[in-house]
Image (cartoon, rainbow, N blue to C red; front, top):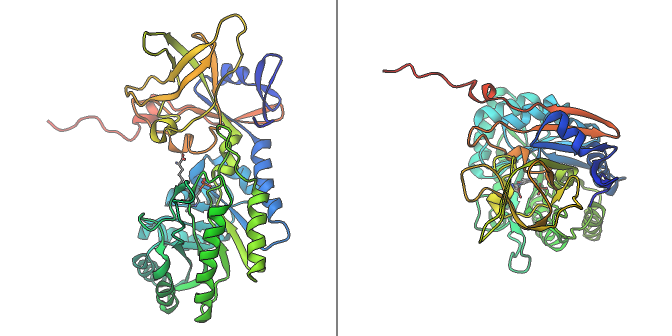
Length: 421
Ligand code: LLP
């Protein structure tokens, strides 16, 4: 539904370019992104936080392609990273190191070292054990690591049926009732400098309430921690804001941020520095994936439309049963629509992109899979020795190839022929 992707003269366009022309030039499957859509999404977050001491740290895991990260860095975003690889990408894309936060439950010593040497803004630490290792690594380097503890607000999922990572029974974060002791411990370690507190309660969240619940719980902790003389410079409320895949109506960034700021102000925390870590809401609806119909296979039980994109390109339907729009690039008026299961060529029954979709399509036609900007290319695999797709970024009437299609030689470059007998 975004205006950056629209039909004109009977075919689908991205900004000022027809999708079919891009597919002809670069082949399929092809990811196509709109730079204006990325900028608009970043602008919505920035605008919501205007006038506040705040930083939007783009969660690279949603889409870590260098040009995408560059575009968001230029739009003023920092980065939320979860690995040494994402650290390298963020730096390469020009994100200033002090705007980088490092999340994740399993940081290695080598990753900690690299991030300390780069001078990142904050380590979002997820366990007491990690605090101790980070302290040791920082002291070896003769530096202090800026840390925040990821606390688990344990918000009630029964009242909020969202995909939760903020609950007690998962691997993320430090339990609410253990957080104060963990902060006391962190404050005593000479290699660490406590700078903040963070939480992240889940992804594809479509209402404000769970965020407000988490905020209340985190502010209770902030007050208890600061009462002990441990200053918390910033509050990082994570990512998780959902997008419209199939009629969902998530709050806009200004609506979400407005509600949070009102609650912060009401509790006297309005001047505290605020961080967010959005991924999906920045990139999800800024991209689509163009795929060609290879074969039509009508049958007694189901009709299959076999396309050249598969679960290795678009893993979300197979992994989560996720729904993505599938629309024709050039809608046909010369053939009746029927119900199809749109599936890929990979040898798994789980390799489907959409089920029971009403389409008038024939072999050779192009289809576009919507909302493919987040957690598609970044989760792509090489299963079935399928190279990763190409990616194109469009701005107005101009297009740039930002990732060339992988060749088979790319795929086996690190492999060695059998030398043992
Ligand atoms: N911060 C932390 C600590 C996270 O774990 C995540 C996502 C984010 C930020 C960004 O969340 P977002 O704004 O994108 O919701 N592969 C799944 C989503 C996994 C999300 C993991 N963590 C999917 O395709 O739905």
